[in-house]
Image 1 (cartoon, rainbow, N blue to C red):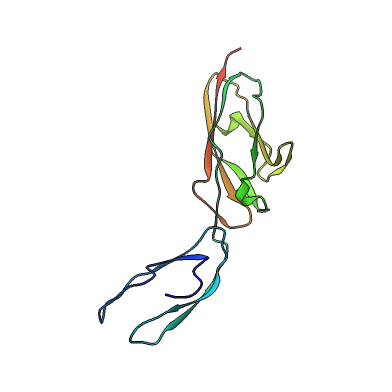
Image 2 (image 1 turned 45 degrees about the vertical axis):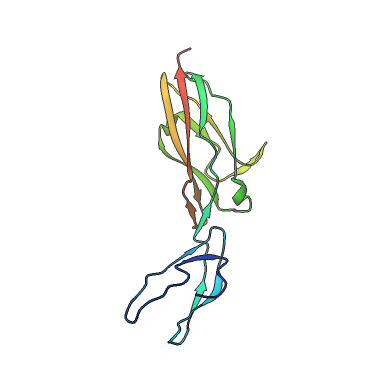
Length: 165
């Protein structure tokens, strides 16, 4: 295999096959790249075969924040607000989103799915407020509203313990 491999991972790059043998190959896009290349599959005893690769953004990898623990929060009282910035890798990614993915979503409030301008920059605010004593937890997931895939890991957990006043 020869050509510009900077935007893709092609495996195996080379193989030696006996007559009549075959090999399976995989081609995956490197995160954040948009490959538009022409690759050539070369053979010692046969003509080379050209392969066009026209890439599309298949996925975005991000660094998720650490889990958030709001600690003890009195019943019916909002916890201090936590700022969640748009992950650094996607600062120019206008299609960034953050949604609840499961758990007790009624005990947490965030500033929307799309990021917006906060005191700390572009991102979201999140706080906990529960109405019954006990532990509460939810999972949040970064999503793409522009159609590309946000590669795992893309989730983190928020938790609190709601305590009687």
